[in-house]
Length: 298
Image 1 (cartoon, one colour):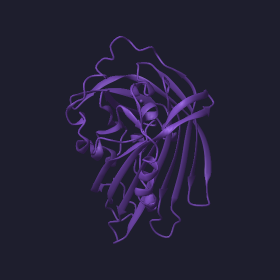
Image 2 (cartoon, rainbow, N blue to C red):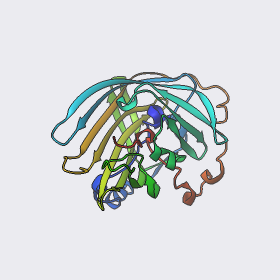
Image 3 (cartoon, rainbow, N blue to C red):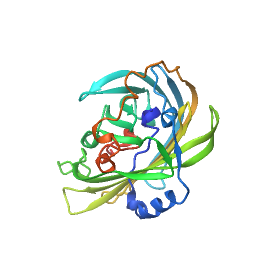
Image 4 (tube, one colour):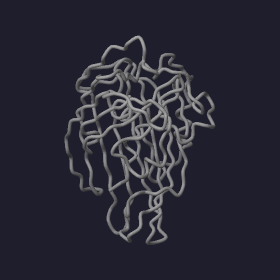
């Protein structure tokens, strides 16, 4: 499912310099005639012991000083657990985005997919989970604002004054269309293309300055397979006299093994719960795309 299967699958949104705002993006998304994917869950398999291996690369550093690294990430559906009364699927990733091992937690029901956080997590992530990653049935094209929060604890002292910064965060998610996509594991027809953007305004406690951060992720999901590719660009404006930080990450599916679905999905296709039952106004804070990407910048 959006950690790597699910996490990576989805798309976290942050936009530096606000990417000219949400409006031009929304207009592009709404330009085509809508198409509804009836069996949306088929694009996000989560059967126990299913496994995806991704070949990744990451470049990071100040502007004009880029270091390129290569890595491998293996994502596995490792089981289930209960979080705040909700039964969730656990995805274990060995090295998502070249950040080391982590577990991510998702629940899927008739209303869509909800992200419940990760271990290890970040202070920022803990303040905005759970949130919904996808709405079912998927509509192409479509978009929605995932969250809009102000005054959150960023969890990092960026200006080195002994106090963690506060941050305002907004996120949007969009289903863009369907494309044929080729990766090391093969060519997949009519993969669903998803884009997520997040923008942050970070208020430096040692001064009156506010700096911007952004995260834009594009991901492709194939029917019966799940996430086959994602690319992500993160930007953080300069805190003082440095030149800021730009990070670009890409993972492509190298091989996969999807375990057959049993007669029962152990509750993950249960009726929609509470606020997820079709009330668009109640989706705030419960929608995301690629949650594992919502980490504080170092």
